[in-house]
Amino acid sequence: MTELVPARTPVRLAVLGQPGVADATFPIRRIYCVGRNFADHAREMGAEVAASKAERGTPVFFLKPADAVVTDGIVPYPRGTHDLHHEVELTVALGTDAPPGVLDRTSAASLVLGYGIGLDLTRRDLQAAAKAKGLPWDTGKSFDACAVASPLLSKADVPAIDTLGLSLRVNGQLRQQGRFSDLVWDVPDILIELSHLYALKAGDLIYMGTPAGVAALQPGDRYSATLNGTGLQLAGIVVDGGATG
Image: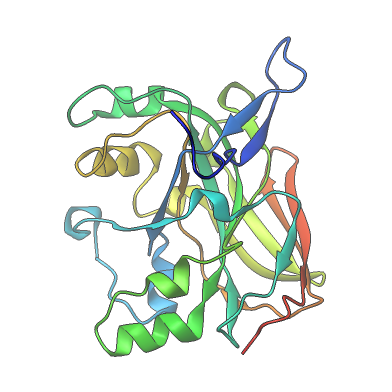
């Protein structure tokens, strides 16, 4: 068999805290993202928020390209937009293929290899224009370098995830912060819901949704996010991508 184009090497995240392994990595297979998973962010985006978990309906999912992950922190300002927004999120890495069928909470939790920090970058003007016309908003969410990701911490090295939270600063100013106890859908919930729709596999990365405070990024802005209680950080800079029109 002759390949007419070279096979692409998957983007890999470093995995910290693997006993006896100095250079453990996580090759990304697929990226699932959860929308409106913090009630305060849903409200700031003009969405209705359920009064109780019994009324929450089903999660909003969208995907990002696995080759769009930024691992060095350097974010080129994307083409086609004048309104790039940050959304800081917990990332969840799956280290095991899901069994056939719909997951339960125990089997869902067993899939998790580790956790990290992500920035879901959004071309907000393109998303808003698509929403206003009732059209899909893929171009607002899926583009080159649209997903920033930190190294991963092994699940064994992370305290109970629902006791933690995360925060984001831009140019030293606090922009976003949230506690995972405030997620509308927690990690097992999301994996169960995804298993209704997809065959989850080792290498899948889930962006769990963002708290309130999303705002614009400009070339030259420096950002720093922290997974509180773990010491894990994600830091970088937005640079002029050369095509902002």
